[in-house]
Picture 1 (cartoon, helix red, strand yellow):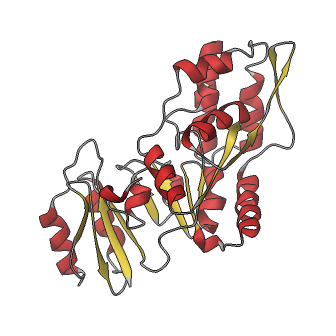
Picture 2 (tube, rainbow, N blue to C red; picture 1 turned 30 degrees about the horizontal axis):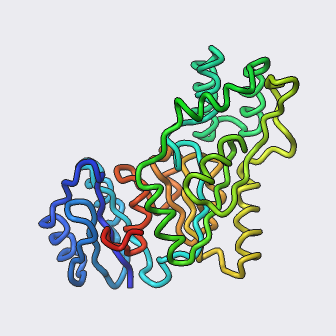
Length: 290
């Protein structure tokens, strides 16, 4: 069996049950289950419909996300998450660059790198090089004044961890930020790159080895082996090209507000919902959130 989940943004709870019921009828689904009033609903079907992506495309125009996945095993034992533009709403390096006065140049490089147009490691070195000479205290300044969490993240972590899941934050960003995010949201561990500092200023260099796409894949393999679980037990979430490796290996790879070239390679695409969508697609109703 497969579960069909329809979701919309919690800030605009406009999911129409007539729409859900019509799709359920067309696809031969069983009874509809409302997960959150006006936000999320689901039903089961015996096979994946041939017009799945056509319906997905039509629903996107109305602000509705559509996810079809195997029912069995959809509740996961591990969360592996990207940080920038995933667990938080910003790209940390862009915020640092903005303070340094090179924001537009760095944002351009970031966008191209995350879309897969540039080599991640080369793009990271180029962007960090533009930060050379910036006082290291700017990191705390950015955390205090510019970093905001993606809605739904606290519910996601609290609920999955309550039910025994392990949570790892793996970022191509920097440990100065992942440490803060991991501690605040309750991740069990975090991995990221290190901004090198000398005499209280950023050197413009990154500690080696650089954590990029392959390091995220390696983290998935290492952590699942350590925990004694399979890769199918993992829900991974990210938005950029350097996330594609882990998204492809995980049992559920979620492209969250992802670049189009990234979303195109993922079966689970959340463009309108927030991080709470990762709970709904596991079958959690809103009243079951921690």
